[in-house]
Image (cartoon, rainbow, N blue to C red; front, side):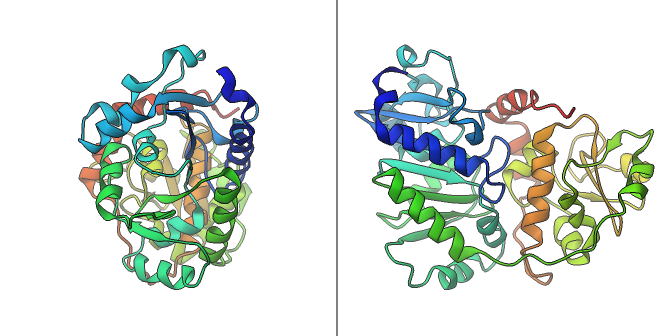
Length: 354
């Protein structure tokens, strides 16, 4: 990793990355990414690696900043995966850069943190997201924010930021996606993240506890299993959450790790035979059993568990009568057939459920 390891800011970024990754309300599974720019090199989290492991593993990839930024500005497809800009001599672990590398490259700030903040997503999926965010962030010192409409992660999102963001914005609310916070130092980004996430916070609805014995009996001898965290059952136990969660997907990582859409069924056997609209011809990865709880397909891994809990956390913070903006079938298809995401899914498969 060269001399960058001796840079106090680099080490501070590793610590911040780990803290963000270990907080399920800030990011989940392999989602989210952080970066720092130093002497023409941008160090960014590797694809498929988890922010939570930033202090324990080699998770950062070096890319040539100027070349990548220029490619993104001219909408060169090479900027999408960013692989041609990796500095091999500094990449001993042979890591592949994050899907969002071009988003970080076009950001003028030295330090950037992109997270899938629960509080942010709960607002960013709503039709009146701009109005809601403006109200929550009003008067927050040193915050210059912009709302960026949904685009596929990677180069399309970077281009959308260039078109929609206010010059000098240090907070980006990404429609149907998450939050980007940037600044001149790690401390500045950390402080801003805490204050912005705090301002966007909403109390979740309460729901009854699941009947674990009954759900276990339903799943026994089936293709399905119980989620690792009982909190995910809220999706099926709270009527408002059930209504909000069912249907087309709300954000990219749901599609990547659970497949498009969400299916509700009266029982496991019926649900196993159902298919999501426009989705693959396979049993649903996530199945909601109204009034009882949820189950996950046995082929899923820990990333799926994290995303099921994420969805429960998100919809519990959205009023039942809210108007939502969902991903279209074309946008869901775009995500499931994207080589960069297939690569991340392959790496995530190591997080098997034991």
